[in-house]
Length: 135
Image 1 (tube, rainbow, N blue to C red):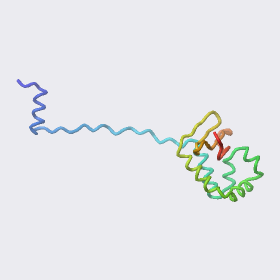
Image 2 (image 1 turned 45 degrees about the vertical axis):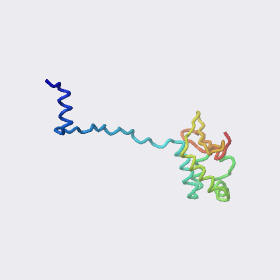
Image 3 (image 1 turned 180 degrees about the vertical axis):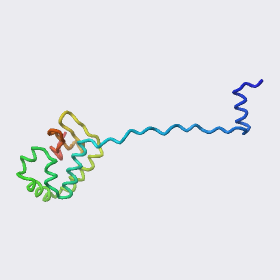
Image 4 (image 1 turned 180 degrees about the horizontal axis):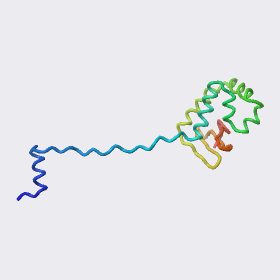
């Protein structure tokens, strides 16, 4: 008498029975997370600054910037006159690809060469405190 397991193998080898590979089930993907609020704050600033919507851009910066500039118009004039503005905005955009480090009410994103963008939490939202700070 041929054991049951050997009989099954004989049927497979002689071609009488075909074996279909077992396909693992598709992985269950976690739902997409909403963008983290630090990156969202930076994206809002970038969009407003690039569109010359300086009132909106001014809302994305900390009280320190508000003390430095008398108004959103003054902030916008300075940004528009800045010869390196386009490059700085491009650096901010590239930083979005890296990790966000959050410690309490302070968040940083790396720019390279030991430089970071610093955001602070004011109330319920994140605002830009420094666009090019040293760690």
